[in-house]
Image: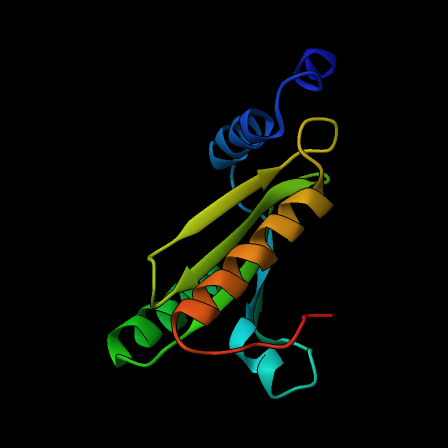
Amino acid sequence: MKKLLRYLPKRIRAWVATLIVMREGEYGGTMYDFLSAQVNNGDMTLIHKWEDDKGLDEVQAIIQNAANSGRDFVYMGAVKTGHSRGYMIVHSSKRDIWIRGFIPGIYEPMDAYKDTIDLAYEDAVALGYHPREVK
């Protein structure tokens, strides 16, 4: 199946990978503040790292508090759903949520990361920020 998917356009492979990983359980992840790269010389600030349901509830509360505060935010995260697979995610005050799944052989993690950085940058610019290139 993976061999067949390699011949599909990148956009379709990304969609397939996202559908697959969204049906799997989450094993942990990290969430970063993308806008902090603007003042931290290109380094994003780690907001939260989790490996269990309690940690997931905590990161969801952080996102909800940011959304309710009325301030601008662009959070970027990586969530692990299995061995070498998962999804990248963007939460921002411009849009609710954006997800890009990755599974090696279908849609590579680095491609998902690049897509996520591009979208986070686009949201930051739309909010009036001019972020530095992220390391």
